[in-house]
Length: 147
Image (cartoon, rainbow, N blue to C red; front, top):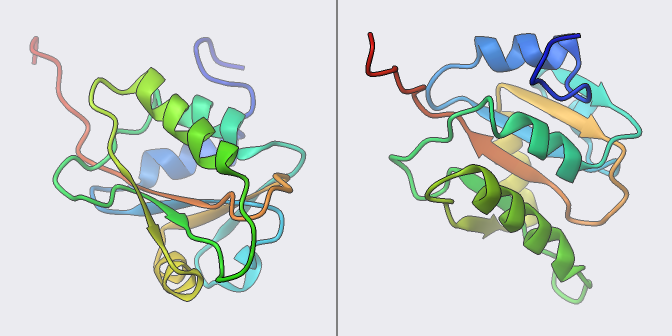
């Protein structure tokens, strides 16, 4: 156990975050997402919803500030319903952790699947809410002014 790091972040997830480079993408997927068949390595976070996991990740992962779509969600299929509190919750966490929270972009289901298939890794959570899938694009970690 490490101080200051969420206990929801497994050793495998911490190692994955550490290995990611600028522009690599992390998918935080709901329990319905076909993450095991996407192609990228899949990690499990069963029993954990995306919100608390995102809350633990954001202090550690610099988001890409040079692109418009550093945070992406899947938009609902036409005719399907979506719980607006999902996006509001993600937005709240982004604003709580980042001085300048990026816009959450939405893309259709199959575009999301295509993008997820190119991700660095997919974290399959226990989140049962529909369309609670999120892609985060890693940026460059800033150096301290003392270096």
